Structures are given as structure tokens and as C-alpha cells.
Amino acid sequence: MKILQNKNLRFLLLVAAILIVGVSIAYAVLSTTLTITFSKVTQNSIDWNVAFDTTNNPVEGTPAGTSATGRTCGDATVTATTVTVANSGVSKPGDKCTYQLSVKNTGSILARLAEINTTSPSVGGSPMSCTVSGASMVCGKITYKLTTDAAGSTLLATNSTIAASASQAVYLVVLYNDEDVSATTQTQTGASFALVYNG
Amino acid sequence: MEREENKTNRSVFIVALLCTCLLGISIAYAVLSTTLTVTLSQMSQQALTWNVGFQTGTVTGTRGGTDGGSASLVCGDATVTANSVTVANTTLATLHDKCTYHLIVLNTGSVDAELSTVTAVEPPSATCTENGATMVCDNTTYKLTTDAAGQSLLTTGGTLVATTGTLDVYLIVEYTGESTGGTNADQNNGGFTLIYSQK
Image 1 (cartoon, each protein chain N blue to C red):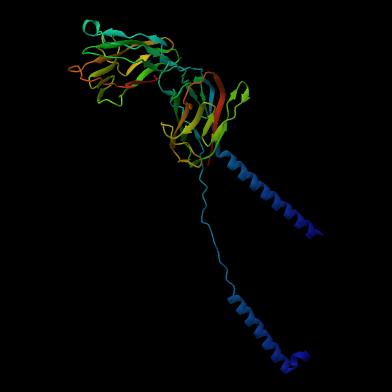
Image 2 (tube, rainbow over the protein chains, first blue to last red):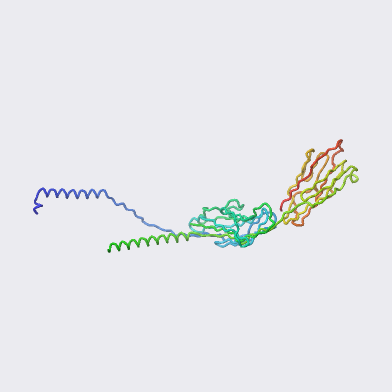
């Protein structure tokens, strides 16, 4: 009480109070609240469906070359995820079997060919040593490849895409790659390609 | 103490939440991937042989012409190997003098063959006119025919079947000039080249 009766002290307290209020107001001016609001976020449903087209099943191989001597193009049985070619043969220059396949994307998003994996055939129970380059595999006198053209010139490549509701033609080509006939017979079993499509 | 416990509980909750999110992302990614497989059950490369050639031996030329050929007509013997015929020195003395050689082409291989090319080989010292399996060089005509009379020229195409195919070919050289020459004219190394290809 004595303190408050002191005029000078009362004045100082008043000034202090004014200053505090002023700083508070100033601080309030240097602070702004920004607000971000999503009115609505919708997550659409996604369909994923990439498979072989089974409309044309079995697929007959298209033979090429001179005579049919030593050449047999077995039928290809097609399911949604597998193609299996029956026993076939190529034995002289120019012999070739071509199978027209189709990969369809009936999902709702783009499909990308992420990987092409090959499995070498076996001969007499032992895996062959083949030269592999993308969708091409050369195993002795027989070449296996996946192409995007019937002539067998353009190899199927990774990072190719299939749009939603679209299809891509893929050709399986098997051919005799030597310039001369061979005096020995060879049977190669189980050559295969695995195509991995991702969304 | 209580504050420490709350802090620990909160940390555990955050970690659990993060793990759940990561797991959800992994599952979602695995669903958007399809593997399509192409398999060849068995590819056979059959043993084959390619063997097209002349029947070997020595072939005596058959004399021909006016009254069976002039007294000075000399038909040299033809020495025949699997891929060549060499006729010894031959003399055509007067108009219509002729020598005919009966050759045989054999296909003992396992692949059908066809005659794809017949090419005349001009003797360097003469001026020649060629037309497939016939060649006229100055006063001398060379030809390959499929009949002994020399009427049917050998042509490309046709099939020489595997293993047992045979073709009778007649090599004929004849004096066809308008008049007998004043001096002897030698024509060296005239002949024909036959190319057989797989059919």
C-alpha cells in the first residue's frame, strides 16, 4: 500500500503495463495462422488384370522354310498365364515356327513389362549353355525369341507398356540358325520365357 | 515417472503405425504384378545330310552328225567326279559334228533339292551368246538337255527328291556354224555351272 501511494512508482508500473500490452499486440501482428483444408479426397478403386488372350486357343505355329523335312510346328496351348508349345522341330537352314500370341490388359491402369527372364532348355537332363540377349536365346543351332512383329525382327523389350483396355501382339519365333545341316540329332527340352508385368 | 512412461508408449505407438503402413504398401505393390510364362515342351533338331552330285566315273561321248559324224570328229572322254565333269580334248571337224555325254545328277542326301541356277561359262577366246542352258560360241554350240536328242533344254526348278532323286542330263557340243572354218579355232574351258539348293 505504501508502494502504491508512491507517485513515481505508480507511474513506472503504468508505463510497464502499457509496454507489456504493446509488445503483446506487436507479437500478435507478427503471427498469422494459415489453414489448408481438403474438402474431400477420393481413392478410386483399381483393377489389375494382365493375361494372355485365350480367344484363339490352341495357337497353330506358322511354318517357314523349304520342305517340311525335319520341321514340325507343334500347337501352342494358351491359358491366362501360360503358353505351352507341344513337341516341335527345326533341322535345316530356313526352318522356322512362328506363334502369334496376345497379351491383354483388361485392368484400369497401365501395365509395364518390367522383366523378361529366360530359362535355358536341357539336353539329356543337363541345362544347355545359351547366349541370352533380352528376349532372344540362342541355344546351339536353335534360336528362341519373342518379338513384336511377325517377321521376327523386333525383339520384345522391357519397359514397353500396355494401356488399360489394350492388347499387345507378341510373337514366339523358333528357328534353325545354322547355314548347314547337322549330322547329329539334338533334343532341347523346356526352354522358356517369363514376362513380368507391373502396375 | 508417469511422463516417461507416456513418452515410451507414444514412441511404441508411432513405430507400430509406421510398420503397419509399410506392410500395407508392400502388399499393395505385390498385387500389381503378373508373370506370364511361355514354355516350349521339346524342340528337336533332326540329323540331316545334304548330298547332291554327279554319278562318278568316265563317260564316253556319243558321236553324232552327218552319217554319224565326220572321220575327223573326236569326242574326248568325260571324267566325272561328284561335283565336276571334265571333258578331254574334243575336235569338231565339220558342220553337224556332235558329241553327246550322258551325265546323271544324284540326290543321296536327306533334303529335297532343286536346280536353282544354270550359268554358262564362256571360253575366253570366243565370242558367245548365252541363253540359259545353251551357249553359242562362234561356230560351236554347247548345251545341257534332258533328252539325248538335245531338244529339251535343262531348266531351273523341279525337285530332286531326297535319298533317291536322279536327273539325266545330256551335255552336247555341236558344230553349228554356217560353213567350215578356214583355220582351226580352239575354245578352251567353256562349260556350265549348276547350282542346286534345298527345296
